[in-house]
Length: 149
Image (cartoon, rainbow, N blue to C red; front, side, top):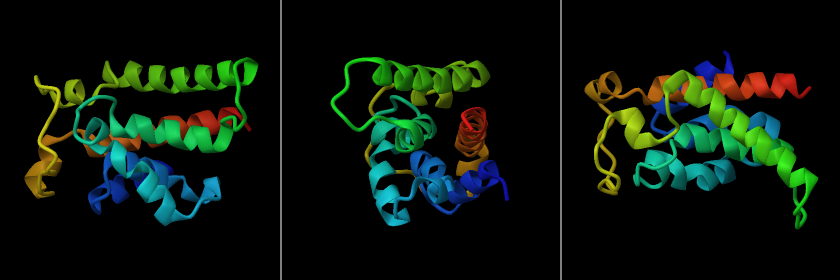
C-alpha cells in the first residue's frame, strides 16, 4: 500500500486530515503512533474547524519537522533551510489545488465553523475533497522525502 493510499484509508476510518497524513508516515518518524495522533489532532478542519490552513497541509509540515526540523534555538541557515522546505511543500500543494486554506478548498464563505464535526457518512465522503487532499499531501510529502535521500 502506498502512503497516499494509507493516508486516504486512515481518513476514511475517522482520523482527521492532519492525523491521516501524519500517521501514514509514522514508521519514518520514530514517534509512537498514539502520540502522533494526539499531536496532530488539533489541526483537522483547518485547525480545530477554524477553516484556516488545511489539515492535510499541516500534517505534511508536522512530518517534515520531525524528519528534517531543527531542535536548537535557531536564527540562521538551519531555520531558513527548513522554512524553504515548508514553503516548497505548500507551493506544491497549492499548485494542484489553488490554495492551502481549508475553507477555500471546501468552498465555504465563513471562517470559523462549529466545533462539532459532521458525521462521516457516504454523502460526507462524496461531497468533500478531503480524502483526495490527504492522498495528495501524502504523495507530495513522499516525493519530497525521496528528493532528500
